Length: 414
Image (cartoon, rainbow, N blue to C red; front, top):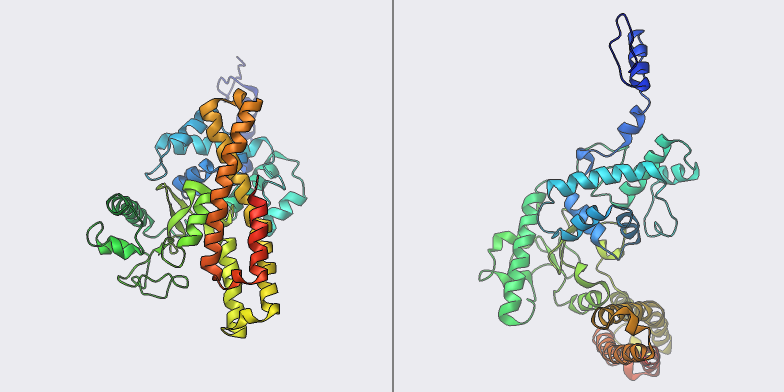
């Protein structure tokens, strides 16, 4: 131990000795002050529940990239989180500590991982400078995470006041109660309600359908087109309403249990089919938008009908345009995603039942091929019905419509 006489006390480390010495002559040594200011703190963790849910979500490349860097015990805590209740203090403290560790170690930026994230000008400028110092690295990583999780994490340049936070606790409770009511309704009727108002009064008090941040008190017309509940004032956007039911069933096929079934546009808060609550965000269009390729194709049909009238399908030009849009949105974009998702799901289920080793054998490969063929046949039938429901049977009686269905069948064949 180093002994210093006079006005210096006994100190145990060179760093502490140097700091004490400089302070004694009127100087201050703060080697990590700027870095410490750049780290996350409790106030910058705006919505820990939503952040935890998104880190569970394997669909978003950025979340997968962050989650796999977390220690095993943290990943276990995330896996155990139900996505409904407030995260435990242990999970919040662990996430905060792990994020602070990550942003100091290496750059989190990867062009492919952040491809779906709209990066701020400040973040792009920091990337272009290729941070050399630890302080610059922390600043870049903080901005990257804030861009990826804007409702969950504050950026260094923002005030530490949460956005869309007024009344959010009560809104979360409303959504939890709506989920319980939906489950009870489905258990009693073996179907989903057409509107959220169908839940009242037997399954839910109608005041639960009002978000505390909704200044209009559920006035119809405030939500997206066709979203206003016809019976009761309702602040929440129900994704299984008649106009969106087909789209939502397709989304669920592709996206699984994270698919939003109810949204609060006031708090940018989503209730998933599995009951998890999370905020909107840029990682995937599903966090923000309820548009699918089929709904975009339907919009195209509506535009043609508005421009050319009810007889628009009688012109070859309009039929060809609708065919081109169907090929682009359905054949080239949607179907490949469905096939890829289905193959992964089937393989995962068979792997759990038969074992990974058996699936690599000729017998296992044969079983996989047989099952995926049956799945594709059912998906082909379902897609054809959905297309006919959205575009009308009249279009599929034309040669252009028949061509689309033929291409679909070819893609879905073994």
